[in-house]
Image (cartoon, rainbow, N blue to C red; front, side, top):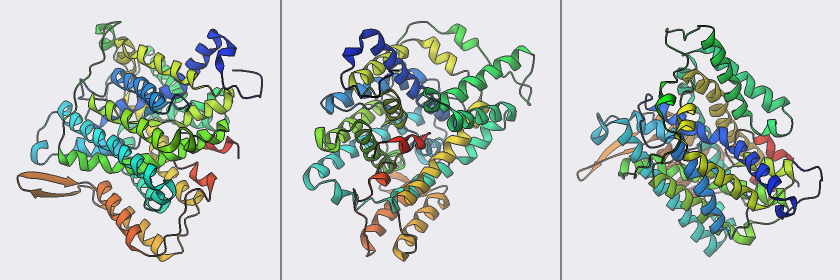
Length: 466
């Protein structure tokens, strides 16, 4: 946006107009990925969700969560909180549950139990924040090193691969267009376009869908490519369809362990933002404050029927691009997101996106999540020639992918299901504690620590100032 290479820490000197444009730019950076989460989750439930986890609720939770994060971090950290992809595997697992109280349960009710699990996952951030405050981040990180978090992230992505194929198969032509567009913008894009490959993939493939429909084409099964009836029926102004989360031990055990990965993502993103802006936010306002902000934002989102929040690497890329490091600009983007959440027609229009486009985007997204898990291991220089590290990684992968139906048991009158990801997380942490030879120390390899998050465009982290 600005021609100068000198960093700007107070955007007010640019004037109101430029500040608003910078805010819009940040909103577009998060928009494509953030709205994709409720769309993907809806596909896991067979497109049956009529309320909760809608685009409107998601946008509101992203905007409000970002403002809450800024309040907790003393308005110092220029971070935007968007929807977390890490919890997609949990939603998919709960959608497939068909035992105990979940047998025959409606999709709208199931997703509320998933949101309850997200509330508890967010509260785990507060526990970690307290521990970090009391004993320091380096000691904490010894219990959850890359040899544990990396394989867990790999499992999250691979467990969703079947969903990508299923959606893409509804119209392979549109899926391939979406996939190719994302690749082109991610590899050869310049400036802002490199920051928003997901959004460009969605927009370009959607334009092709409009063209194909105008030419009279249909999906291979004969169904319409696009259906605009819900858009015509929706209002211009209205409240997002908030719903209060429900709680059950099985759903909590599905969703809560995923926080192990997202908390590491948070630490990596805060490290990345610190390196980008030249300020040590791990020290001031402190990692414990940013964890509290992220955790409360996640719990608040889950409580009202929204997806988990997480700090967005895409917006860190925008910071590097614009050289404007003022958190006020991020807060402007958050306000724009909240305003959009009160326009139901926007939500309805986005919801017309064909499943095939979702599948095409998922090819990159789910594979990227697993690839970043591999990168987490490689860039943190995990030595897999050591038996203890190899054992931990191997057991996590087999548990995470092998227990496809989880383990169900009964305590009293309560039926509890431990999913593969929950089992993998618990076993991985225990093995890391029990087996001798843990030599990981946070902060020794800063470039590795900065690339621990789940982002559609991890190469943005390569631009961070060393």
